[in-house]
Length: 440
Image 1 (cartoon, rainbow, N blue to C red):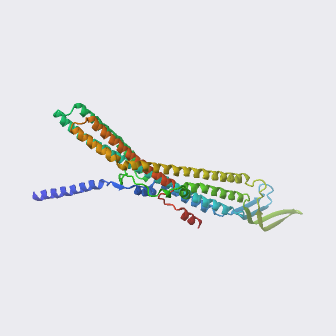
Image 2: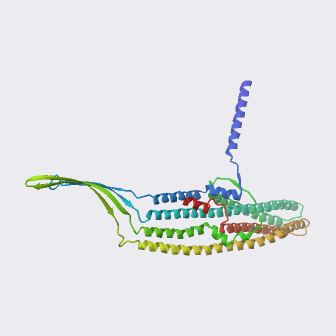
Image 3: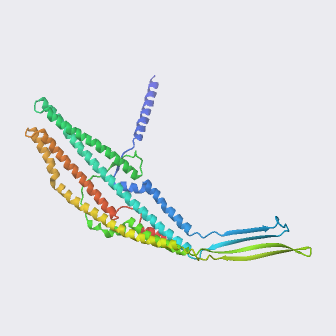
């Protein structure tokens, strides 16, 4: 009996150990994630970006194809008179011909393909720029929502304490139901606001998971705080730097280069490939002479050369199209330069304006509002002020604190826009190194 009992105990302990171990393994730990880590993950794992990177291999494939020499052609003829005179006459010929691109067509095609590779890298870099901007934006908004939730939690906690104090005061005849109802309404408003913020946070988390290339079930805790820190040197964020680093401008400039390369290809296509060939011919003829048949068989070797003459089609329309496209690309570059200048100036203006506004918050206005809440609450406990003043002071502090959080958020977003506008952001692509590698 004791042996059976000991066996059951051992089995139960083993089952319990396996059960709790399986439960522990099933719970995936929540990962803490900073904004820089989120950007790094997005650059590695974003699905759209990973798909776009395959375009580089596609462009390299086009470069390989552009340098391929045309295939030779095998020709063969067989002629016989079996259906007609049936005298046994026949002829056979076989030959091979090779198109010869002597106009520089292959070199022009390769130049077009190389420019296309550069454009692909520039477009990919601009996709990275947009991805970094979006990840930073959503992460900053998520941090701001968390701060707003903390603010509502503080209000809920304070109002809960006040509700308890008023209920105790009602029993002693020191407070009224009117005071209790007023605080209960404020408490419910804070709870409803928190629920709205929680829903917004969930939406931001899902949006960020998509940018990170993660499933919707991916759990993380946004690390870092939403706090104001003045930018050290705004002079480095200037239009000149933006014009030298923006990948979308580089892409637009490469459109000019592509139009010129296409123009060179169009000029090369004016002269089609010359075709050179060699052939062998066997000819068997039958001649009737004085009621006798004489068979004549000849074996011949020959050469042929085909030279297309560009009398009518000299690619006039194609050349005109490429020249017009070059002009359009130049205008697009100038328009983009103006747009970049406006983006930099707008972001810089928002950064400086919001920075000055945040300085006023840090000068003590938030501390003053918080002290005012404590002062009014102390006066309420002493019977010097009514419950309306308490609720009003708390609402005033909450509004001011919420405004501060939103201003810090807008400042961080403006600083992010300034960095993105000037091309100052993490990227996996270096234009100079890329162009050197592709030109080898």
